[in-house]
Image (cartoon, rainbow, N blue to C red):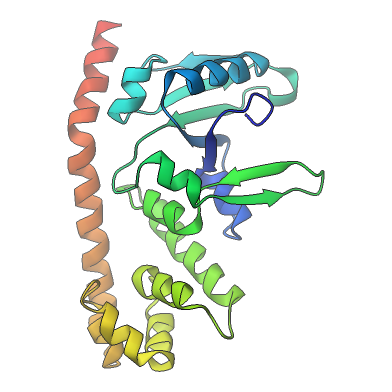
Length: 235
């Protein structure tokens, strides 16, 4: 991707590993800029990987812009059978220009650089109907919380209040930053339980919040799934 200057950001399980929340994944998932020039560069990268499209939808700009993922299987000996999944739009996630501006760039031990979704954007992208994503969100935010134990920035405190899914940590955070907790409870009402130290109500509210997000994701994907079914039948 970098060799061909593809404007793309690593996400999914591989990105979670970089952020300290280990997850087994056979796929490399990318969100990318969906325009003609960038797809031309992407085609060159896929040719280098000897990657062929699999399943539906077919590799076309209109499907990416609609919100579908396009899937590829690599045949290059150095990446044999590696699957690459490409998207350009996700539910609740901002446009690519904003994601690119906020990206995280890490340097590997080999000297190569990797561009990732920022942690807040990755957490948002993980809010799906899939069972495996919710424990991962919890681990991602916990890892970030424990990596910054003293003198966190206001932005970090805000992120934790809005995204932590661990009741004990939310209660602890509310004790450490009561004013921020009260202020952000307007945006995330369950924080009012954390502010009052009501553990049982907080746990229940977190379950309700997750259920609501899962349902919103199901509703978002319903018309897209119908489109995929139509493409399968047409094929």
